Image (cartoon, rainbow, N blue to C red; front, side, top):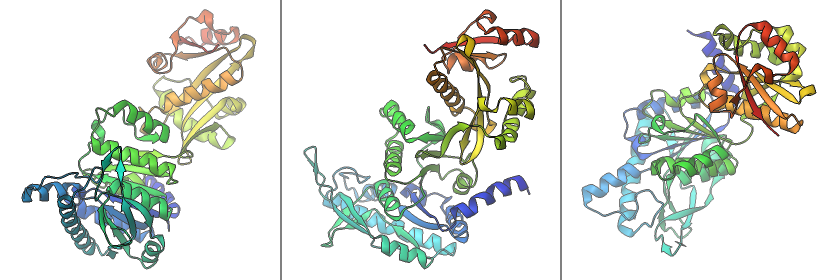
Length: 426
């Protein structure tokens, strides 16, 4: 047994206890061979006193039933107009999926129920288009859902809802998940899919702030799948509605749910509201973490060795990047006020977080601090990672003559012959 991993897992248990997770599963997930394993994972969460609500989709089953019955669909995902024939197919698909979910949950000893917890209104006429029997959620019966959760019953919510007169409407399941998560105060909304290959999506990082997710949507609106665009846009809406973290997972990855929840790195993509990731001034308690972070880079001759004493002596120059309250990156900004310059130094990111843009964020943070202090030029010295500075951080190559006198002396004494990299701020 890897006790280090066990300790890491156990740190999450008290944090998750009695919290609500909304798990949104596409119809294709229910049809996948890993769905039975997902049910076991949900049982693990319940054993840890995590309160789980499931919202299911029906897209795959709607398309399959429509093909079997030779019925043309007006919309398969609940975003476009839903005519009467399409609604009937959606009702049949919803019943099919719900029964399969309940049967699978029973085999995992999960008590579950299908509550009528949504009050739905017609989506109406938008842009001159009548959406017919497509609905939008007016209200979520949170008291009903909390009552089920208090009794140890897992609510399973379908994308078919009714208004106060009993009229049925088709609702997009991604939107249902957002509405439910916001209404019950969920701390996590987890989208599980079997039809999105997140690994092949260009430029999709493991962690995205809301603004980064919005930028991704703008860049890839014409090239990414409609399913991914829906997950991301609804993730952004959920964050803005008060859900702190939204996870996008592929059910085809074994143990995806537990791997995502009980490790710092995870296996999917997370969209987060402010507070998950932060950069702050280093404190005395961070010195050990900084030394651990830079150890591999020092061994690889990418960074100069540092001691606890040398870091403490210039502690005010150091900044750390935290994810989930764990230090995963650091940078130092050494000032040379006589020449209005500052050195970006000791830049390091934990190996498991490499290639996710964190190094660039640390440099940008140091740059912002320097600019606020009126520093006119940044410089960095690098023997092996200079491509990062020139290609991703906007530095250009300089010469030792560009260094402040005191730093040039140290540069010459070191004998490393590192490249001098410069960035003008003013």
